[in-house]
Image 1 (tube, helix red, strand yellow):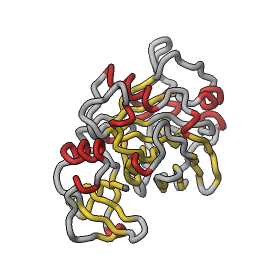
Image 2 (cartoon, helix red, strand yellow; image 1 turned 90 degrees about the vertical axis):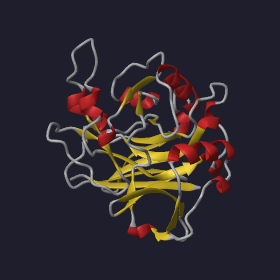
Image 3 (cartoon, helix red, strand yellow; image 1 turned 180 degrees about the vertical axis):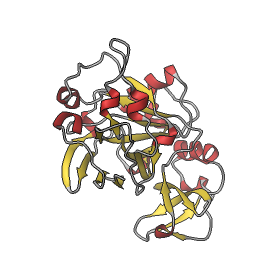
Image 4 (tube, helix red, strand yellow; image 1 turned 60 degrees about the vertical axis):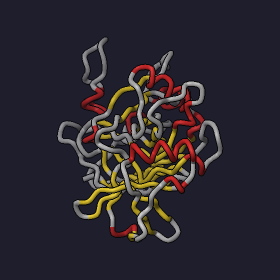
Length: 277
């Protein structure tokens, strides 16, 4: 099942998407009420769907996360990516927060921040939490589904942090209107159980820059959920960017330019198409 967060004029709502018919039906009620029920039951009958249909072409696809939810990012979760940017592997996951204002929808423009000249891309699998409590014995049972993410980063700002203290991850990762998420959530019942193994790729103007697989993660999704929840309790609606494979601009020196079309895709989930403006 595909679940999208949409806007039609000034109205914002969640909807069930029919890809073949290119239509959607609004889901009535609050996300925090119906998402846990669906996550633990995987039964569409728990969703109260509006009788009328809307055309997918008539709505804007928003980031599939409420403004009140946490947005977490995992750094350095692919060994080859660490090697290409000359960083050592950590003994535990590296997780930090991203500002909600950085998020954009599947077809929205990427804002080119004036503070950077090294705007980079990172295709990532995004995990959407569907439970108000994480079961540490079975964390994957608490996942509503997965989305595509493009963790756009200002690399020159990232390296400006004080030596021996930290990188400037706020400046690098939370620039307004830069980070694509979507196009929707594909629920976990659409996939095999266990750690997902999806091909993911990213292209710039048709040139493939990244081509990896989520099965190559150093820290699995279950491990990331446990780790994060022990530090700040996860709730339904929180999302986690789980890291990027090799091929980023920081490794090659090929950064994004104004006018570039960036396409981030994960098999079985969908595509983000965002132009840098």
